[in-house]
Image 1 (cartoon, rainbow, N blue to C red):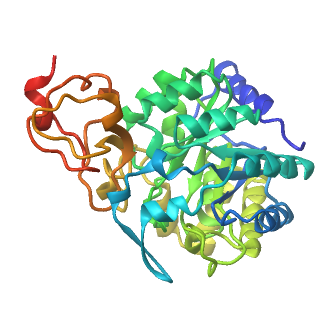
Image 2: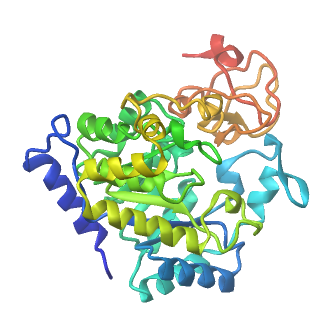
Length: 390
């Protein structure tokens, strides 16, 4: 295998903790960037297509191939609304149901990825998928941005004592702090992936100096999960500002029917991205910034670099509390009923439902008497149970 991620993460921690890591005085320059091809669900549950994607990603220069273990019930409620696809509108829940596959699929993909000398990476979205992934004995795993506040999932994953990539899209600084408190780096190595949760994400909103801020505040390695359409700008400039890893969605064609294919990079563009990352890795940081300024315009580059203050990007601000997890009623809950654990799910709100209380309230609302009718799928709010709180 080209990279041993466990060694990579611990070595990066050593550089942070023991080698006078002074971002405030000069930009850190990482020469061993891990390039992650996020296949997500582009395979459409077809093992033949999955292998084609792996082969193409390896040929394009990916160090790491990433999948997602999808169970619709772990992610959202059937009433969450519809998504527009080329074939027409379909319930988002049903779209996720179509992407469910047996765990043996991922075991086979892990074996195939590793036979290519690449790192296998996968994202679980709930306790069931996390435990199935653990049983595959991965070297590292990934937590997506919407699950950053899913405390029960974070505690489960922390118990595995594996390195973790944690995406930080549609989150605030306090949200990241709470997640890291549960994951407990450096005991469990964590690499934060700066992200703008918008599809596609405008390059001008990336505020890449946040990489320096996050590394300085939390003392962990940082990287980027990039949802922009440009193959070079964010990965190249992010490398200059100290990204240890660059993740980008990968597809065979943007005309394919995968959920993320319209914003993914086909092989030729992914290869351009890899070239941009490797070039930036070989240059001094300021050289990379000046080169992009000459090629793309200084004003654009400065807007991409931003001010380094962690905040919600304009394109993702409306998704806050809707894309993140909150507590939702799994069935109609009538006035006067006492809430039991089987009535509540920790889900993404997404399209048409209202958000509920944060996941950390899940144990506190058990036993509360419902004061107002809560329709199936809707978020459970303080006003629904307020007088029943202990």
